[in-house]
Image (cartoon, rainbow, N blue to C red):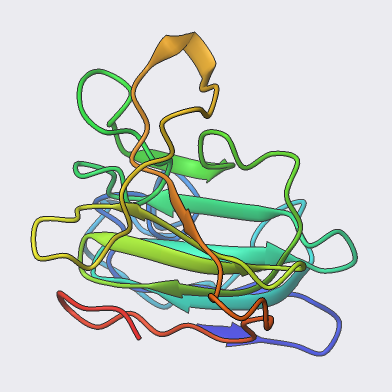
Length: 173
């Protein structure tokens, strides 16, 4: 991925799960033949920050701090679903469940989980938590269509604001 100062995010390569933010590799006769022709910026979103996971991409929109994800979502790493029909892949940018009113300053993509820091300095995680890499989901949060969400939140005990998070394969720091 390449990001310009103006907020254009250029993505290319394998796109089987929609991790490039579009339906196919534009300019290729099949979705797996030509990977680099042509490279086009992500449509309709100016990006301030981006991170790439195994088969998913997370971005923070420039100017608004809105968070979007796209790509493989089998474990809720894109939209925060816990299981079921809402855990389908996303070929176009989508806002994770329950996070549409939040403003973000940092984001990280892991193997099958995601994490972000809000403007208020809180840690938010979602996706696969099998190895403890995600926080427990919020029990009182309202989620679209009454689906169960994997989104969890945490703030430091002393109230200091977090500024950065990093996701590994099966851990978060």
